[in-house]
Amino acid sequence: MANIKIPSPLLKLTNNESEVEISGSNVKELLTNLEAAHPGFNERLYDESGSLRRFINIYVNEEDIRFLDGENTEVKDSDEVSIIPAIAGGK
Image 1 (cartoon, rainbow, N blue to C red):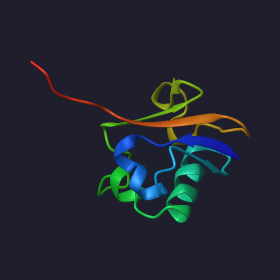
Image 2 (image 1 turned 30 degrees about the vertical axis):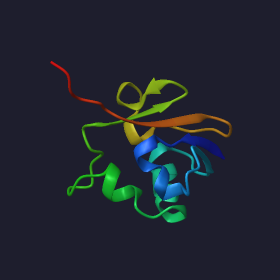
Image 3 (image 1 turned 90 degrees about the vertical axis):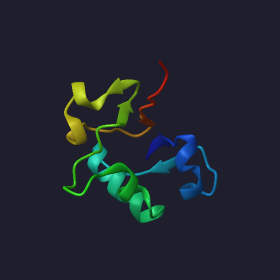
Image 4 (image 1 turned 135 degrees about the vertical axis):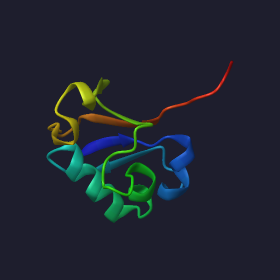
């Protein structure tokens, strides 16, 4: 089971739990199982074509999956996965 850190804007989907344990062998399986356990994540994480939204960053043990193997990045028990929405703004 991997530990997934949930960002503040999505806490309502997990009953305000900031971390949840989900099983899966890679990031894609984790996100699929996260949706099954806490419905509503897919529409916030994926666009209409089924790709991760550009402003969603996912890290496995503090490494951006875009620089690893994307959603196919392997996940082991006790790995920490963070979902981090990009923040825009300022001048």
